[in-house]
Length: 163
Image (cartoon, rainbow, N blue to C red; front, top):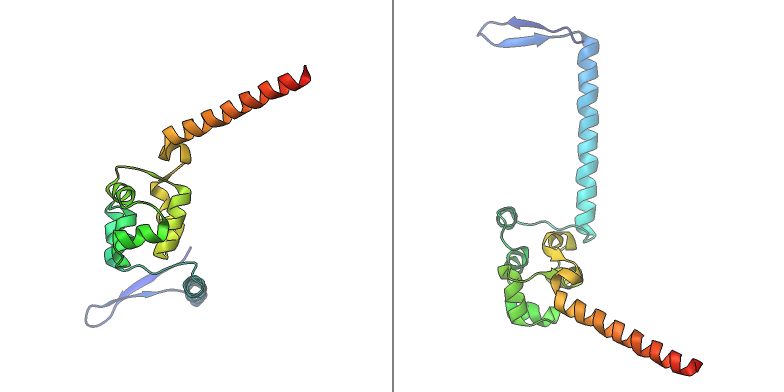
């Protein structure tokens, strides 16, 4: 436990007086904290330089934190139109509009394409991505039915061959 003595000097300022060993320990702790902070800053700068991280303007971060659609916010930040993005991603403008309005959900694979087209890490879009089944349950069900139909056909063919 640190033994601190408080004294008032002329002018009313209050000073803390502590044993030298406690002072030296606090200085060492502050220095190690500075080293740790410098290491974090260095790693962040390296990640940014390597393209693993990006720096977003505060206005963009504020919009994302406020719950605005990240696709729209990031697209507008990149000064890209919907038409430009749909060409890069390979979807229809209506689908992109629905994604940005929150009317539809897109699968992770689509969000990966969008992230690449926008030049941002996928983790900025993952909160709004869903599984393939959630994105288009009718298509997944239809695909499952096609697989079951093919399997049934193959079973019939195999049954005929065995006779």
